[in-house]
Image (cartoon, rainbow, N blue to C red):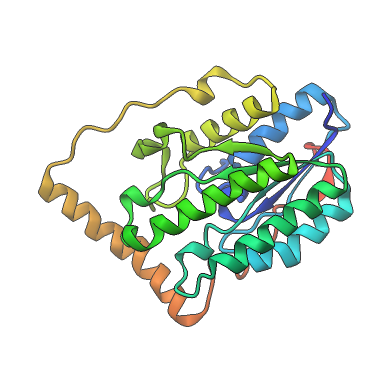
Length: 255
């Protein structure tokens, strides 16, 4: 093991929504990866997770990146921009230029850096014609940045298993527990570390839904998830406004 510490940076994807512990807090792929790395490295392995749901790219860079660099970890995961592509004001050129700068900064301290091509989340969401090209552009640029700076790329977009709705939560935007396990398995595979085989098992696809039942489910989803999201956009609020990082300090997993 060449990693004695790991800091995770990002938004809800890295915070772990919607993979809940029994107490209602979120686990997610990063906690799973940290647990596996700690089993290899020993009790002195340090882990911090700075990710907060709803954070836009500029906030992640301004708030979390300096904190991560100050910890001087051996391994950093950086996943941001997913919330930005959903915004009307999305500026791809500014974000992508800054993305490259941030990865260069993270790598300059000698840490290994994990980057992600996002899975195809738009298959079940409205606005596909607008948002899907943005995600494709971001994914392509992430791959180029990873190659340019020697980062470790985890290509979730190339994994068609993520088209299975069982890997997504009821809000259709965040991963389910099975989805987070699969991401953790892919991260560990990219790192050359073994994982539990069942993390990569593909859950069966749900049975086809009759058309009328499907439309009723769409209406329930819109009322429960889409309408509150639109309200937050109109009022300038975020789901993470009152949330703090779950592991803001680098320390053993027993902390």
